[in-house]
Length: 78
Image 1 (tube, one colour):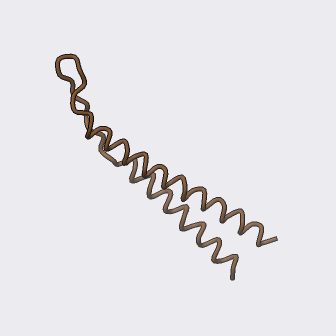
Image 2 (spheres, rainbow, N blue to C red):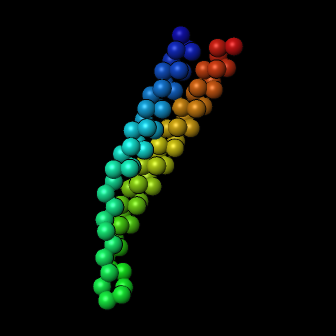
Image 3 (cartoon, one colour):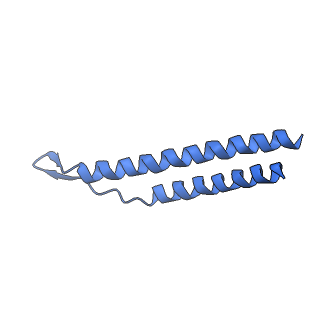
């Protein structure tokens, strides 16, 4: 019973990681404009980068939890 729960949670975290990484790849990064040789209005670009970084960090946490739970499931099975 415990092995099934741990394995199921591992699968759910793996799916969450995949979904978060897919979502982060779809974030629109705005084009950076320039005005008279200087880069103009970087705020939207930085906001998009922060969103991508946050999604990637959450995905990495989910992947770690998935791997840790899978290791626990392997331990429980022996």
